[in-house]
Length: 92
Image (cartoon, rainbow, N blue to C red; front, top):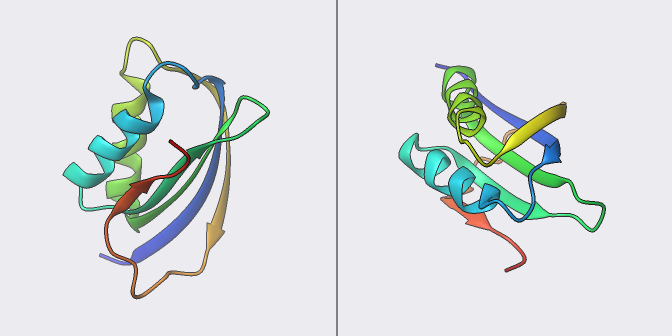
């Protein structure tokens, strides 16, 4: 499986609903590395690294949460970060 890295901006009801912690749980359970943080404009920003199947599974898990409502995602491909370990929630 090829490793990829994606930068994702989530729009919708994504702040104040446990999105970052749900994303962190999903990413860690799927061995995805990267980070997630809230932005001042009400969006959530994420960088996720793993296989395309792993990242798609994480997105599916987030879409199934009853409190989270993702209305749109802006997705950009990024270069893989070889030495990254773990998944972090930024900006507590």
